[in-house]
Image (cartoon, chains in turn cyan, yellow):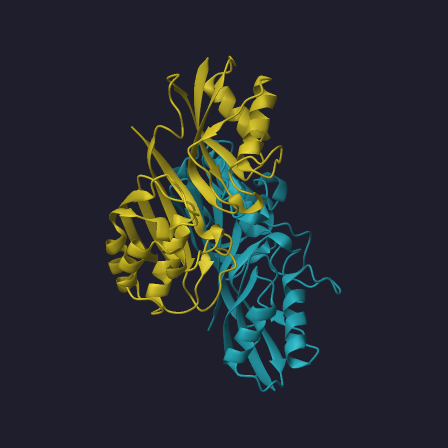
Length: 246
Length: 246
């Protein structure tokens, strides 16, 4: 059987997130599986690198599926982009060894979060950023980013309830660039817990707004109490940029 | 009476264009006038710098209106942005001399048109660009731009039927920059005829794709026959960036 890897871009606004819920086609996974079944005649389940929440976007989500289709990679790409809704786009189709697994083989991810930091809202950025009207101290936020770098137990920065699985993750890169009124927060790490990117961003915003101190980050690492961290910023500012494999 | 100047940004996707059609509130002008009436209690008509077509966007449309309200500029800005739909934003409120007229006093405009030039469509740019999958010769397009610069009768590059008014306009700047897969066409001129920016862009695309020759531009200047020019590219790629006054 062939093992096909897809690199997928989507505007998450209309969807309940990546993961199929029953037969709902209000999910990205559901939409893509329906098209592949239409294309191959096979009942196929695709494996994503991980879930994305309702409203979250992706520039480079990765998924794989097994198929007996004889269609070429180009034919698969063309068919899918012709029949998928316009807010889901297949950017790349690759032939992989049989053992490739989009979730198990993932060694890291890059996310971006965008903040529209201007007293005046934006008519154009509102679907892909979080509006913060008050001034933010970017230097202070970048100092906070340094504290979050490296290997930590991020339980307190996640929406997870008690879990037996490890909540230790390593953030290799975390920084904030200002591009005019748009703040671009970049996250690179070996993995991210549920809502971790949005809770860390919310914490950075509170630090930048002077509502939280940088040292409180250490306290959250110790207490692991999510309520001590910042608000979960909205999904529409979040983009899964890239999924890394060996 | 006070004369208030508004600088307005809007995502034109949901609207029938700038100009109010009867009492329709599917127009930008209609939406804004309704809010101003709500704010001031006065039945007000606003004067725009000019119309924008259905689906066209603006980063810096300008309009003015006369009012007796005692609200401060800040109060006007805050009220309007609180009650306008999120896809219309007032960026600036200014107090003008009584004789200021957004249309009569306009001495020029800048427009941008965006082309997504990649075989793969974009899930994010599709509402603010025109998708051209085939390769385009940007150098050739920029040579064509030079031919269009300056003072010409642009009748053949407009959607106008016979008219007694002058169709001579001056284009001071016309150039194309490539920003990754996005082509950004910039127009600056003393005025633009109906659909002129979209027809010129369509002509540039056909030249870039090798379907038209640069010299055909001269022929269109002479014949003034719109059918000899390129297709009208879709409204969603067009932005009114700025309106110039003395």
